[in-house]
Length: 112
Length: 116
Image 1 (cartoon, rainbow over the protein chains, first blue to last red):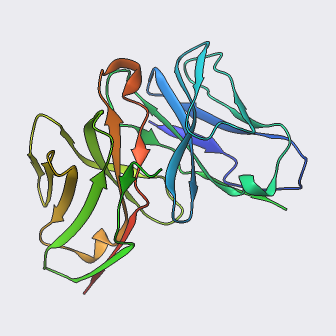
Image 2 (cartoon, chains in turn brown, cyan):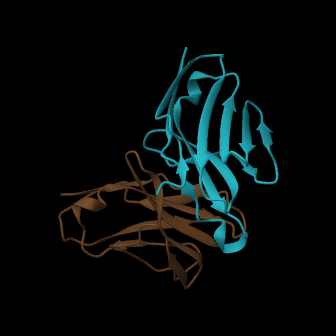
């Protein structure tokens, strides 16, 4: 099993550009989420989804959009990138009702 | 407002000795606690967890202790091995199960270095 797959692994954007970070899981998990990791801050929840068609905001949602059209995929969209969005992004999935989350390998995003 | 805190940014121990990583939390609604291990350029991987109804959970060399009255948990690694060198994150999940469980709140992480 591939588990949670994130693409791309690295990305450099110019301020104002848009892009989509892809996340796919093959474990049939209902729950998917996006976190960002910044130095000294741990991981912070951006958006999450409890199933296809259902999404909600986490702790730091501003500047990001999500949608969940299938159980497997949960893309994260940056509509107009800002330097403050330079970070490492992790996608995670889990069974509904189980707190243990499985993480992808991360996407390192730099906005210049 | 940091609801989960790991006050030690780093810890250095000798191979074979015990490693103790600490974590404090402030939110009484947290019901489940987890430890994740992270190597550079990889995603966090689940290590061990504990429910708030327990005070200890053991899995091989790893033991997590929970002191609810002090809102404190710790991870003990005995004996420590060089391959344990990584960043360790504690995380907490609110109660009520269902849709709340996936909303993990993480501490800042502690860099563990185990010297041969």
